[in-house]
Image (tube, rainbow, N blue to C red; front, side):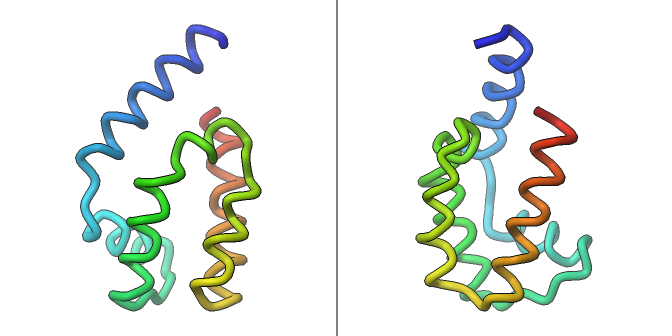
Length: 89
């Protein structure tokens, strides 16, 4: 692993450990995404549990999320994931 990647992952790990459901809701609102409180909790729990898998390119875990949320929300989430991963990692 490259040192820069290690730093990014540590920053993300610390952010995730302090993340709250309101952070998910606020991010969605900033992206102009309508998200219910239940969907917010689904995302929150998913990110808390699978963030390392996602950062390590184990995108198979997205199939778990796909079963729990609306298709349009899933597609938007996947699109944002790809955009942000390309931009930041």
